[in-house]
Image (cartoon, rainbow, N blue to C red; front, top):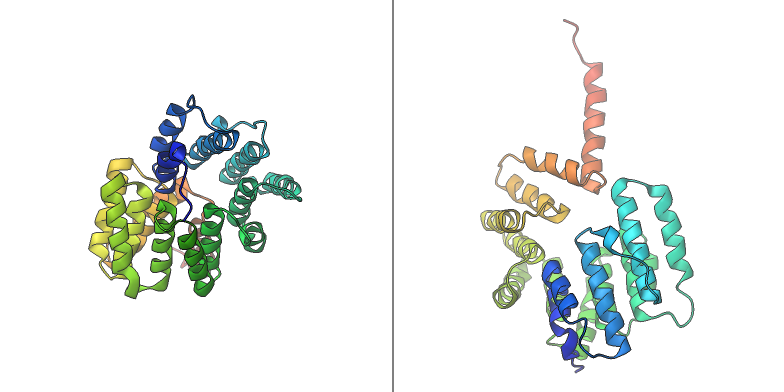
Length: 295
């Protein structure tokens, strides 16, 4: 079992658990510690990834290494996607694809895969990581398999991660994703792992959303609503996952969801659910005109 270097253990753990500000602070606090060039590059990459996760895209500037250059492209892609500039995002994708030649680093492959996945290019994303040599590559591979409804292959990826580092936070988080994808039979196992992680490292919007999903899998919609309320109140969470999961939890309880639909469309107009709602509303309005009765 491969041990994680102590210098970056806390940084990795906080990032993987969705504690992005804490991970950023940790990354900055250890900047002057002596470490190998490889760990220094990884630290710099995690700092940039934290900024991207918190949507501070302007804080991510292209560096000397290919990984930092790829992260600058990821920040550019996400900023353009958020603004709805689809034409320019294609240019970023082409630049990332040009970086994927022979000898490319696992970190660049991981970054490119994340961008491709956001662009809906699942096949290209999987090609970047399916022969991955790092824990993060295999974890992303498992997530892609889940989106492709290949739970059998996702479970194989999890087994590979357990052989690489069974105690890693990332391995535990990946086991949660697979448990949730399996269905209600694994909901209690997912909840148990999430409770342990939350007790040890503290809650984050990501962990609270996963807890809510586990409760919903078990049919406990009120408990799910409570976890999502915690995400909104303690972290002012307005991310798409929190809003969408809140809408789902409330709908199952036949509670009004109007304010959260408005918030979703306001904060995430390009989210597939926002666009779907616009399409349905537009179709309804067009049909309504046909049956309008003149006063």
